[in-house]
Length: 148
Image 1 (cartoon, rainbow, N blue to C red):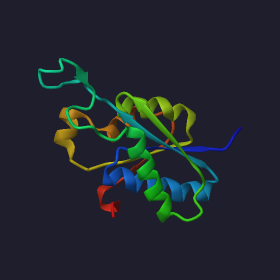
Image 2 (cartoon, one colour):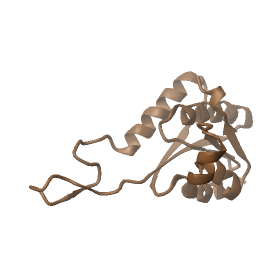
Image 3 (cartoon, rainbow, N blue to C red):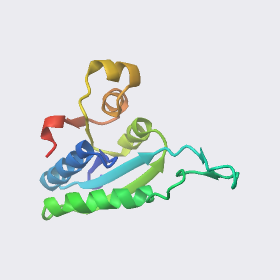
């Protein structure tokens, strides 16, 4: 069997950055590698009438999701000395679904949560709650109070 993998969901939020830091620290303890996964969904947006074209990022150019993921990984690695390498994966799709699918190849899945409570979660569903139900490995949820 190969080196264990700790999969961590990263979306650029403070909770996901805390999850990434936790995963890096845990990877040192376990002798594991970390895979940081960012799932994104860009709906086409109509640009004003003159171009009649679809632009996936709206009117203002944005950074590519891979740049955002790399920046989050570099920031986290700076706070965890001697952390092993991180594989950066960007996929198009629903974050909860993509993390659950990727959990098949992981020893552990780590996600942050904003802790919005039961009502929004029941109405909207949260990535953390969906990962708990559908992941194929143990899941660690980093609570909002752990965000620094």
